[in-house]
Image (tube, rainbow, N blue to C red; front, side, top):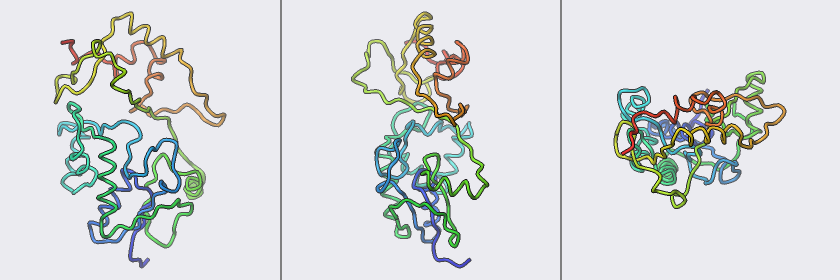
Length: 254
């Protein structure tokens, strides 16, 4: 196969990094991104590497796997890590970013690379005559998803992920919360809302009885265990949340 460029489909986190790394090695790239022509219900902008869930890229310490991976990416000249460091916000021991500033910086760095041509268009056919990186992620368009399924005999995989709610700080009663990071790692960057036992019981009861969005008839409940919706945790038992995001350790009330 003789070609003068490589295709990358999708300008999310993976696609943006792939396009940038290929171009940095002297190979021209055509980077296809449908947003700008066709959006998704989850995306709010046309920027590359838009974070549609949490603004946290998880732990940054070299004592865990995700921290080591970030350090390896830094040493390899990662555009994602460079942009994350430049738009970093306090988050204790985690690497969190200003989501708008982060995606804007990634967009500018990738789109302005002299060897990257950005094509704003929806890809509905997978090229067979050009090396192509498919990095469309979980928000792949229906048309392209059908083509991918055709390549693997229709087999597919899906799961439900949790979405982090964004709360207006002006709606929070600051007299009922306190700033602290777990085990005092890094800055005191998280707002914590202490609960009495009864308040926790009431919270659990409200979660398990809350109205749910109905599933389609063809959908089965499959959840990503590493990012579990809190209402699903609550239904697994009253103490399940206490071993997850609401574990009562390292956050002593000041």
